[in-house]
Figure 1 (cartoon, rainbow, N blue to C red):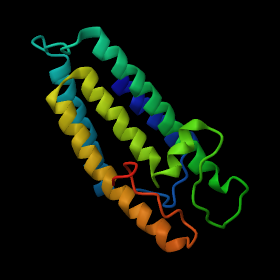
Figure 2: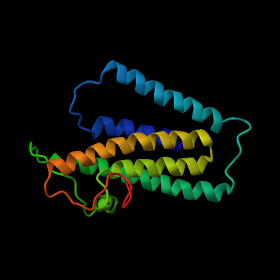
Figure 3: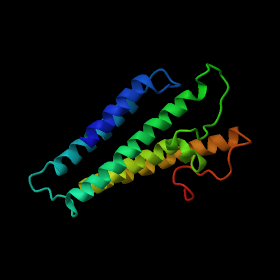
Figure 4: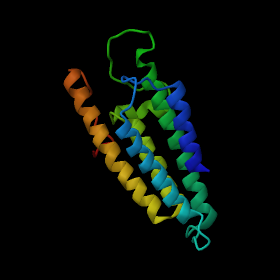
Length: 177
C-alpha cells in the first residue's frame, strides 16, 4: 500500500504541482525510467508477496513505527514540493532560493538545499525497515545515490547563483552531505 501511495502521490504532484522547464522528455529517458521503475516494482513485489516472505523481526511494532515515519516523510516531501512550486507564485521571472516557512516540514531548508530528496530517502528507508526486504534496501540505496547526485548539482547551482545563499546548508543530509 505504501509503495502504491507513493507513486499515486507522485502522479498527482506531476499533474497539479510540478512545473517543468522542458515541454517533453526524450524517448530514451522515458524508456529508461519505465524499465527502472517497472523492473524494480516487479522485483520488490515478488519478494514482498512471496509465500516464503519472512515478516519483520519485531512484527507489528516495527511496521507501525516505520509506517509513521513513512507518512511523515511523504507529507514532508509533498510540503517541500508545494513550497518550491510557490517560489514563483507571484508570476515573476526572478529566481529565488527556497527558505523555511511557518510549515515545520520546510524547516529542513535551514540545513539542506534539497529537503524533498531528504524526505524521499527517509520514506524509502522507512519502507525498507517496514518490509525488512533486501531488494527494497537495494532500491533505496540506488535511489539515495541518484538523489544525492541531483541534490549536489542543485546545491552547487544555488551557491553559484545566489551570493547570499546560506553557507551552513549542505545538499541532502543535514550537517553531513
